[in-house]
Image 1 (spheres, helix red, strand yellow):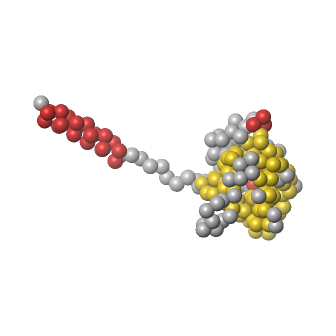
Image 2 (image 1 turned 120 degrees about the horizontal axis):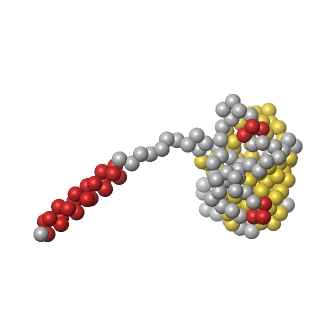
Length: 179
């Protein structure tokens, strides 16, 4: 009787093992996930800020088509980016407690509104509700001679803190962060 149970158990285990081996994996995301942090030095164990975001590409389209002026935009692709402050900061003139926030923006020709939002794990900005805003700060938009095919975020060290710089096509937007 013991052998019958052993054989039955082995047969069931083989069925599940075969199904695990037959798993289908999806291809590469069209807008890969990336992150930026400050400080960027890998030897530094204490980060001040880190952002994880999707990097859409223009692919012959315009920035205005992909991130329309005057509309809340997810600030990248796929899920709304999540920015983590590891300590209290001043974000564009607004005091913000340490924590993780969704990053949304409202693009404009000369100025963007940068939004830190308390609702995490949201797809795009489809479920955005301004009552969950933690901060809304204005940031000047400038133009560069160099065009960026993929949406990008980087941190630039400045006296007293950093600027979180967002760039896509020839548009650049910088938000001061006092650490």
